[in-house]
Length: 70
Image 1: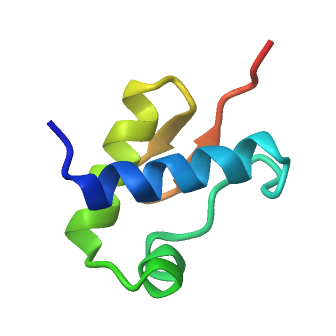
Image 2 (image 1 turned 180 degrees about the vertical axis):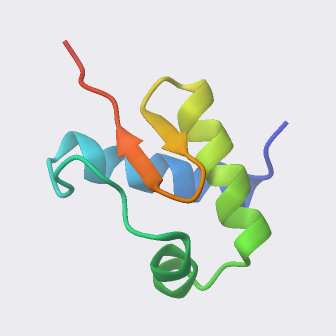
């Protein structure tokens, strides 16, 4: 189960996705770490939560992409 911090960041990113703040790709892990002042491990857990919720897909070494929503 995700920590409250991970859920909070994931919820914020979902809001940003739904408001079309991002094109088709999420910012890099490094940029997200800086934005949320969180550890790389925390952001990795956030990415796992977003994937589990069906919002994203990740290509290791390439990036995290937003899935098309119908």
